Length: 128
Image (tube, helix red, strand yellow):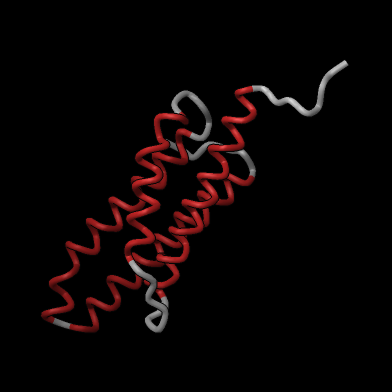
């Protein structure tokens, strides 16, 4: 007879990491949508908080399918940051190219967040 009130440590860890993933993806999505919609500008601190959470909890996911999600989210933030910095001069020289570049980067970031969150919901790892 199995006691349904107890769960294995692996099941508890899996659920805990999925909760962290949902929180992180939600914070990423708020910032990503804010980057696409000029009238809605949430604080970049939300993204920094999500990034720090992912850095701190990444080790807990080592060896699990969720490890790829931590890597996916961290890489998404780093690449978006690099691309924003590289295209920053376009804003000072020409407003329209800067707006277009940042809009495309923001849409790419929204795509990464959505793709990752959907895979997390399906309990699927992200591609390497």
